[in-house]
Image (cartoon, rainbow, N blue to C red; front, side, top):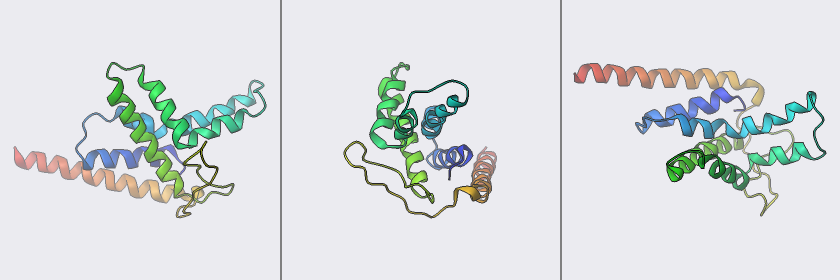
Length: 154
């Protein structure tokens, strides 16, 4: 599920299922690895140092990603809940990416302690639209169900 849409929809569905009201930080965490890893696109505009692409792609690993979540959480008043929510969103991103078919490896969950790549090859990244449409239908169903239940309870 490489597309940002699928990461966002999975988190939105999970938040709806647990009745979470504030979803912003967890959504930010869910798209954080892809946002950070797209920095290499600057290489088309300016000269980037050698090895920059490797450094950026390491943010698809648990420990560097959680360190980035903690760093971003310092921007918020409630540091601990911000770090927790961004971290949960980031972990959800890694979980979803682990189920992709990776042509060049997988996800290094335990980097820098292990260089083992994990993948379960359930989804083809080029066919994410089928998953995205299905997830959107589930999200709409949940929202409509909650809306109708709220109207009936009134």
